[in-house]
Each structure stands twice: as C-alpha cells, then as structure tokens.
Length: 264
Image (cartoon, rainbow, N blue to C red; front, side, top):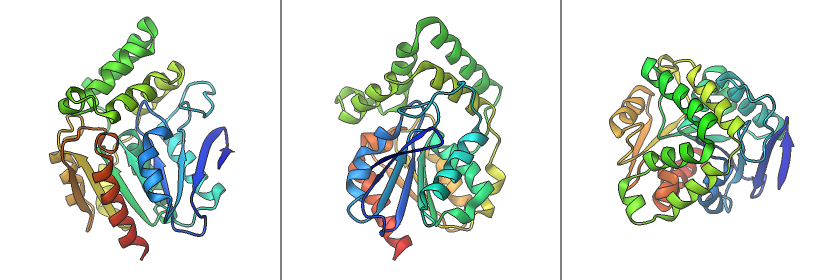
C-alpha cells in the first residue's frame, strides 16, 4: 500500500498487527534498494519503506535539505503512520538519519540496525569531495557521477561477476532527480557528528558491515558496535558498502534473527 506523508512516498507491506520495521535508504538511492529485505520480512513483520525527501517518488521541493529535516521526517513518519516502536534499519546515509533521530527521539524505536555507515561529520577533505560532486553533476549531469559513485560502493567481485545487486544499484542511482541528489549532498556535508551519543543508546542495536566496504570499513563499524552498549556486529562476506544489495540472503538472515530476538 502506498501513502503520502508530508510529500514523502511511503510503502507499507505485511500485516499491520505484526511488529513493525522501517527502512531508510542510502544515497543516492530510494526505497527500491530494500526490495529483497521487504519481500523476506513482510511475511512476519509490518514493513515500511519510504523515499527520503528529494529521492524516488517523494517531492523535490526547493532541493535544499538538512540532516535535521531528514531525521524529523523519519520521526514524523513513525508518528503519522502509527508505527508502534518499530525497529529502524538504515544503510549509509540512512544510518546518518537514524543516528540523529536516535539523539532526538530514541524512545520512538524498539531497536536499530546500522548498516555500512558512520557517525563522524565530514572533515575538510570530505566537504571538498561533496562540493566537487555537486560541481560534476552541474557540469556533466547525474549519470557520470552516479555510475562512478556506485562502482566505488561495491566489492570488486560484485562488478566482475555482474552481481544483480550492482546492476540494481546502478539502475536506482541513475534514475534520481539531480536536484534531490545535490540537496542530499548539502545535507550530508552539514550534518553534525553523532559519535558522542553512541554510548548513551539504550535500545538494542545490530551493526552490519560488508567485508570489503571501502567507504565505512569493518574496523570503523566494529568500533561503533563496541561503543554502543551490548550491540552486536555482523560481517557480510563478499560485499562492499551496499551489502544488502550485494548479498541479500546473508543480510536478510541477520535482520530476521535480530528482529525475532527483539520482538519475541
């Protein structure tokens, strides 16, 4: 079922009487990146996916976004849809959104799954890289940037083997509106550092990382898991940054086992 919440496209699948799970997608993708996870979990859970402001079927608006706005959107979605303390799962930029949402309203969620993400704000090199990305999109269009970005997000083996997840990531990323992508780059470059809140998190957390993630390496993700009280860590073999697309079965198992533990 598709609904609109404050200009955001939201999809709900499964029995609403079941425990709820909400997914927050990565940059520069949309809710479609979670298709394999939704199909797997919707049999036993009430699953919500949505297009972050500026992506997919959600409104572009003025193209000027902040991470604060993204976090508020997530919290508002939970309240508006009436999700009862859902487990929230996000990858990369989706993780940034969740980290800030947990700082603001952790009590809205029963648990969190943080995939291939980081808590640190951009350093100067990171800010310059995002500025260069906006310039590239302005000068050459979205496709060259998106194709190169996705290539750097997956394991080399995923490219060599023509992994369907890699092909899907390319399809989704290159289909976005350039204004929304540039707005997200601005939101990420201005986001706050959420590292200090990790030790304060009280809800159960699972941290998942691709074995060959070059953007948020396993070592940095393990530190997140070690800092959050009682968090568990899962390494996904033969996957890069887009672990759920590259190795959906392994990610599905980790998500399912964690969710069953949380809601039983």
